[in-house]
Picture 1 (cartoon, rainbow, N blue to C red):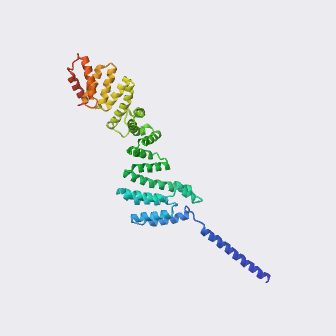
Picture 2: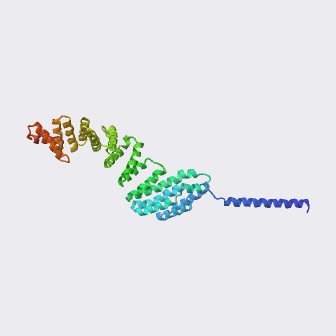
Picture 3: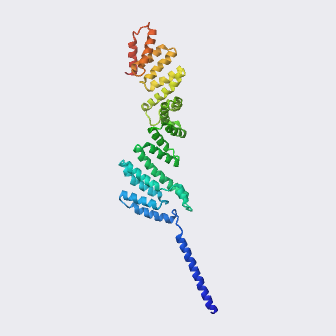
Length: 360
């Protein structure tokens, strides 16, 4: 073989080898897995999603979205599919078909991957953004729909469990009043107080006063008068002489009467009659038909050597004819007789004036 012939053969062999190498590289590139978070896959997923959205039948569209989620659990359009799936679920909530709404919500939620599944997929880039922008919001969206269904169907234990999951995902302050409401209605008073303390720690009393008032009532139920008194004192320090924004005087007065009544009870028990009388007079001011207020005003004045004042207070207690009337009657008569030669003559006039003063 001549030198030229050998050269031509060598060139042909080299070209063949190069072709084989290129073919092998191309085959390898085709076999390499495309990242589900790549721009290329996003365009394909979005095109498929756009086609699904054209389905007019709500249940069929929900089924197609479920099928898409099974096929593409990790996708940059996860939040789109979850949001649209929720629209398919809403009619069942509106019809109060709680069982169907819950079944649909749980089925889709089960297809949303967890953090470990995403990490195990070995996706080179974009995992953190996917978790933050798609995974967590989609999971929260579906859990919120389940929370609504459980709450409205009065499955409060399941509602509490779901609300806790949402709160644990991202401690959102807005979830605390929801949890408090659920635990109060169960009732799970210990959990309610636990959540209530978080609300009080997060908000000044100017904003959390309603929670503080409710917690005080719960503490009273649990015979923890000290904790109730401390909370009510904080509220009255701010709103004893003024009304919260958005509340009328008439609507706020019963809360003030309740708060001052509880605070006064402890003061009276410690025999600080002057301070207790001051507080009970506030109770009577904000709720003029509170017979216990007049009864204890009478007791405070009696202990403070003001029998005439005590007679006036006991007369109002009797005139109201409620729980404390019998006890007030006894003290009223004893005091009156002691000042009128052991006679009750004229007591009718005292009672008549008391009724007039009370608007009875």
